[in-house]
Length: 249
Image 1 (tube, one colour):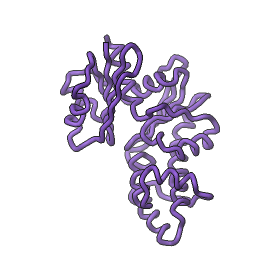
Image 2 (cartoon, rainbow, N blue to C red; image 1 turned 45 degrees about the horizontal axis):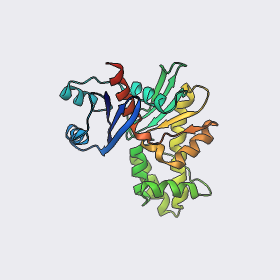
Image 3 (spheres, rainbow, N blue to C red; image 1 turned 120 degrees about the horizontal axis):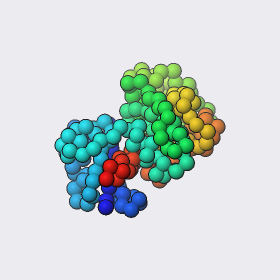
Image 4 (cartoon, rainbow, N blue to C red; image 1 turned 90 degrees about the vertical axis):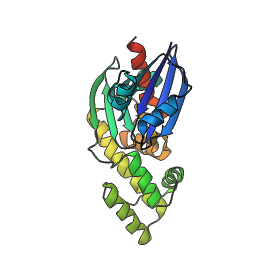
């Protein structure tokens, strides 16, 4: 049988299909004003027997397809163990939230911490700061890695931080140094969540922000331990949902 999981996030929708315990298909699309329509487009032509949904829009799809839904915390706990069977500490930085999850020896969720209800320190925050500095996301990460020092960013409110970045550059601050300061501020905020619940061993880093090499490197330094990024960190939740679908059979 083929088990599908779909993660309807605030910025992207991800689909994963498992067969005989292996990932056989994955797709992603930006979330539109009509996430149900985007999810259906993503599923077009994809064969599966059972599907489960997670993410912000899970109840929308669950009601439409009459399929089971699971929380993002549960989905990411399962998805992380699919890629790294022994992991016990997970950091997920998505489009509009940050989650730190602690697992026990059997992979069951122990504790979790989430950011407050704003985009500070999330993927959307990074996108806005990159644009304010005139970088693409890829250029933003590389510029930060090339900086010799960091310019400290005082505000993590997206609106105030954008104004601060514009002010700094107008005063002559180097863009790469400001970029490094932004990355360090976000990692410091995320590491604060992790340190309250993290178990010994490596950190499993999921979500779109895990694609940012500068974030991973600073996080490793901040936590003083290895950080593992799976081959596609954006589909971890979708895989967790697919695993949930298989468990319900």
